Length: 567
Image (cartoon, rainbow, N blue to C red; front, side, top):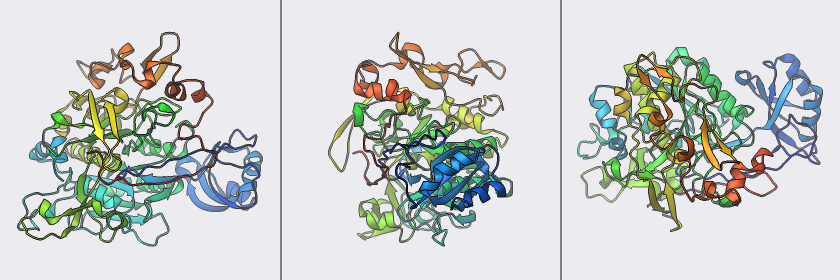
C-alpha cells in the first residue's frame, strides 16, 4: 500500500441486537447525525428497496448492483430500523475508508529485463488502475484509454501521486529517462512498457477513499472489460478486516471481477511492524487482500543490487494468515522498497515528503543539483503489487486465453523460492531493528520471477476458484498449524495438472509448507498457545471476532508515511 501508509484501524462494537449489522457500525445511542453505509441485499436492489431506504431518510450514494448492494448516507438512528424492516437486507457495513498501500534494480530482481528480451511488452493488454488517478506523464501518455473520477474531486488527474507511480511500475516506457533524455545512463522503465491503462480514481489528494467508490470502480472496470480488453485490475490500497471475506462488500466486489475473467492484484498492506498483542506483524493482511481468489503481494528489499540472492522481506510487509478466516497470504512477493517510478506534477506525496524526490544525477549525466521533475521514490506493498500486474500483462500477451486462476497458479509455482530464511532490517525513520523470517505467511509461494512465469506452460483447470489460496488450521491437541485445501483441488498433494505434472503443496510453496513444517520453532505466534500473540490470532478471541487492529473503543484511522522504507 503506499510509500508506507500505515492505517491503524480500531473497531467500535455496535450495541444493538441486529446480527446483520456490522459490529464496527456503532449505533449505540445513535441520533440523527448522517452515517455512510453499504447495505447488501438478497437480490440486486431496485426501486422498491431504494424507496424503503429513502423512507428512513437515506440518500443513495452509489448503486452497487455488482454485489447486490447500495451505498447510502442516512441518519444513524434509522440504520437498525431499516435493517429490521426490510427482510431482503442481508448485511449492513460502514462505508469504510481505504488508503493507498504504499526503475532501478527491482527491474532485474524480478527478471523483467529477461522477459522483455523475449519480445513481450504487454501490447494489446489493458490494466485498470484503481487508485488516486493517473497524471500526465510522457512515459504514460497516449496509453490511458479511459478515465473516471469516483471521489467527487472533479478531475481524474492524480492529486496524490500514488496512482501515477503505480502505473509507471506497471507500464512506464521510460521515455523521460531514455530516448527523451539524451544524456541519461539509467532508464526507469516499467514491467510492461506497451500496456494500456484505464484510470479509475478512488483516492483523494490525501490518499484516502471509501469502500463504495472502490466497489463502484470495480463495477465500472467489469462493464468496460470488453470495450478496452481489461484483463488486469491493480489495487494498491486496502483497510482493516472487520468480518469474514464472505460478508465483506469489498472482497465480494473483487470476487465478482475475478469471476468475470479479470485478474485482480492486491497489495498485502504495510503492517508487518505492528507488534500489538505481541504478534510480530502476523495476521495483518488488509482487505481485500484477504480474499482467497485474488493474488496478494508482499514487498521485498533489493539493497539496490541486481542480484536477487541477497534480497530479503521488508519489515513492514503485512503477514498472514488473514484475520478471522486464516487464509494463507500473501501469495507472492515482489520488490517494493525505494522503487523509482513516474511522478505526477504537483502531487501531494512529492511536495509533502521531499525525501521521496530523486535527483537528476541518479539517472542523468549532469552537474545540476536539481531534483527530478519526472520520477520519485516510494516504498510499500503498493509498489510490489503493480510488478505482478505488469507480469500478468506480459503473460497475457503471450497466452491470451489464460484465466485468472491459471495466471495466479503459474506465478506462484514459478516464483523464486531460494530465499534468505532469516534477516534483520532497520527502519530508516525510527532506527528500530526488526527480525524477520521468510515463512509461508511472510513470503507466500516466493519471489516474483517473470521470466520463469513466461516460460511455464503448465495449465490448471479453467474452473473459477481452482487456485483459491488455502487456509491454515490450528490443532489444539497437537499444537500444529497445517494447511487446509478446502474446496480447491489445485494445492492438493495428488491432483494432476495436465498430462503429467503434479502440483503438490511442496511444488507451490517449497519444501517447508505442509504438516508440521508450517511451524518454525520459537516464533511468538507459533511457539506457545499461552502467549498473547498466539491467542489473538488463533485462540477463542478470534472465534468471538476480537479486534486485531487495536484495543480502542472508537472507530478511527490515522496515517503516517515512511518514505525511505528499510535501510
